[in-house]
Length: 464
Image (cartoon, rainbow, N blue to C red; front, side):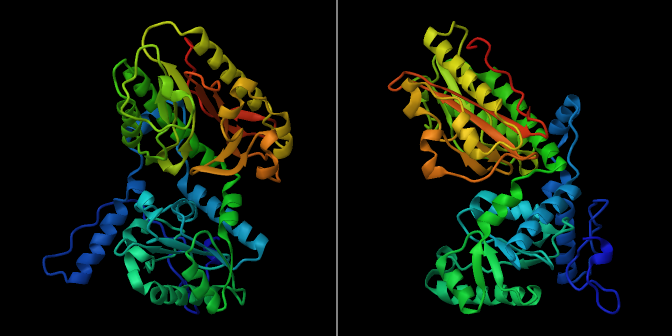
């Protein structure tokens, strides 16, 4: 929406929110005078907090200097935000929905680029966003958190959220859900143009029933958001490159610190610390294991001391700068010894598997054909294999997730690879009942002619 498209009244005043408003340049406003009233002081605090928002301050000198040395550019966040909002609205128009209500923190991030207690909000529904097909984007935030969206030009209004889940509401769930539904239904009426088809990504049944009682038709918002997030813009790819570079710089420090006797937990903590130091946000899993704990895969890291000669396998699952995921896996040898023949063989098989499947990546190949043509896991490792051949990646693991052909029917997906998709190609090779296993994973971009490998971290040459 351009400035000329913003709805105004007869005097030219915008009818909603602060569409197009942007705080720039960012500065700390001067303190009010000693005689300022309470409201003036509160307004000053909000303005100060908005100007000092973590996303305004940016990832910081450490990450930015590393990116500059690598020749990486930082994303234009204004373009990134406008692209993502339009992607959502394309899907809303396609499904003839009047809008979408978002509770998943990653969907709220995608729509608004505003964050607040992301992990806590995954299990406490205190924050949501209303995105109409036409009209104002309204962020319902935790009380007194309006400053968290003050720098965002596409968030038209911030309101305090109505929390009606049991932790907050107790026996008043039904009563408070009805109050929440009345406010949402008013927005549907005001901005739907008669269309009352609303998509929601997550909602407890009391809220669904309350909205339906008010004449709102409810549809699957998860589908809307997964399809919107499927194709990445150039600015999203720039953000993802920065996140991967921050992840890989952290991995190098982690690999250099790996010595016999340190615990898996201590090694894993380095990746967390270095990610945060570079403006990253969190890590979604605890997938690091050593020695006998690498087979079978999907064991969470532990207090086990890593021994000389062990292989150490991990999956980053790292939410880095700008909120983009760096999801790559490596397997290293601990110590200065020589790998065993078994370790060499497992590593070679995993390398071959992932390289063969990457070569299938090209626009136009269907998910079904990819599954049919994918490299087969050796028979003696078949039941230990990773659950998917590849999955989408963006703000986290995303649609699609494509499995192996012999498991195709229960997980069949219609669709094909398209330019702008970003994927993670997976490999785990560990023999049935074996001592160890190897986990590898690469992050790639689907291009107009094939693919680009986005992850750059070298493989362990000793194991290769």
